[in-house]
Every structure is written in structure tokens, then in C-alpha cells.
Image (cartoon, rainbow, N blue to C red; front, side, top):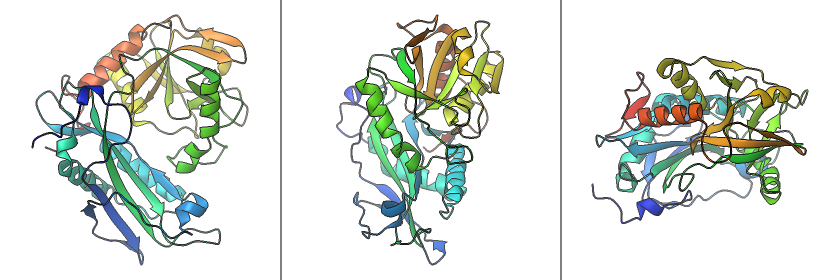
Length: 341
């Protein structure tokens, strides 16, 4: 299929309307068959559950061309499972995992002309989401729901390479103990908006949140998990029941152990031990790994030996290996790459 006339090399990370999106509706206790739609507008009752009580959750993943010309997605089964977990926690009817994967395939194929060419640095970003669509005035779950997948071509998250970030330790909390920090709920991101705008206004790239129970342990940022590298090249990531289980972070830990022969550990990490690490990175779908050069803790600067000019050497190896797997240059573990075409 002929590609759309888009300047792929200069795409930003923003929304561009594509031709098709997937829509399924839940009514009378069941999901309908679902279908592709050319209409990018959503019409809702003014009292819809999503508008009144933020009953919504979402996922994020990418489709892209590999070096051999296939169109693929990366570990979408984990996104399907995480959406199930999010839906259960928010009293939203589960959208079946097998149907999730089929819907991803359908919407990518329908928008094949928007899948950027290999080597452009761009991808087709996919946003599956669930929300309460029927009227709710009392505090209770909605009776009707929509599952949708929108797509949009996006450029690399960082133009010209990933410069090391400066982040701060936040005074605010991201998630409560026994709350919703472990799911991808829209409400988690809404509450972080004030803090990220304030961080940017103060000259920081992101916030690092501590555990809200003791405020002594590292958790994650507003939109990414965190990894640290020790001086003896061990990969360490925080362990907490209120951290979102990032697909990218889980993949990086496997890459560290099975591809690079490094020790990888998920454990509690205290703020006080952070200065002992050699490298730090934020990991997620958008950028894979964003290197961190400096963490500021209320005036105390924690500067990593990897510096403010480029990725640290181990972080770079992790990034290169995982992106090599994603793009087909390095053999992938079984089940990691779903070939759509």
C-alpha cells in the first residue's frame, strides 16, 4: 500500500488523525462485535460515567516496519493483560485479551498507509482505551462502555537523540498505598498534570515520586518507570505494589540478563542510596529509555557519573539491544514480536 504523503523525518510526538479507528460497545451485559469506524468524533451523554467520575483506563503501544518489511507490534499481549487488570480495578467490563489483539491487527492494517517507513525514526502509535459511556449521577459504575483504539503516526520522542534529563524529587504523591498506582487509569495521569507543569516551570524535565507511606523509597515518575545501573553494571529497578508494570521496563530487565549477561534485580530502592548509582534512566513506550543526568532533591544535586552529555554506556547497550530486537535486527525471544503483515 502506498504511504501517505507525510514528512516522516520531521514528525513530532503529537496527534495526527488517521483514516480508521476501532470501536466496540458494551450494552446489556455484553460486548458487541466491534468494527472499524471512519468517524473520529465521540458523542456522549452529558452525564457519562467517564465525565463525572473518571471511569476510564488506557494503554499505549506502537506498530512499525522492521528492516525486512514486516509490520509488527511489540509484546501487545502484555498491554492486553494490563488493560484487563486496569478494567477490573475500575469496575469496567473486561475487554477480552484475544479480541484486543485482533482489534490491534485490524486497526493497524486499516491504517497501513500511516505506518511510517523503516529507518524514518517514526512509528504508528496506538492508544487503546475503555470508558464509561452511559449516564451516571450517583457514585457507581456506568452500565454501558466503549472500547476504542485510535492511531496516530509519531516521530521519535527526542529529536536529535536523547539528552540526559534533569529531574526533581517531588513533594507530592503519585499513588496511595493500596490505591490505583499499579494500573493505567486516566485519573492517575490527571492528578500528575499540575506537578509536571510546575516541574517544567521550575526548569526540570520530570518528577520522581517517593512512596507515599514513608517517603523514603523511589517509585517512578509521572509517566515512566525508573532503572538504575550500579558501578559494577548491575541493573536495578524499584519494586513497589503502587508502580505501573511497564512493558518496556520488564523487557529491559530480560535484555540485561539474557542478552547482555548482566545481573538484574527488582527491589526496594531508598532515596539515600541513589547517589551510589552510576547511571539512571526513565523507561517507557514513547522513548524506550530516557537517560537521567541529574536528580535534584530540594537543592541537593545528585549527579550521575554518566554525565549530562549522552547516555551512560550500560544504558546505551540496553537501548541499542532492545530497539534492535524491536526492529528485527536482533533475534527476539519467542512471543515478543507480533507480525501483523
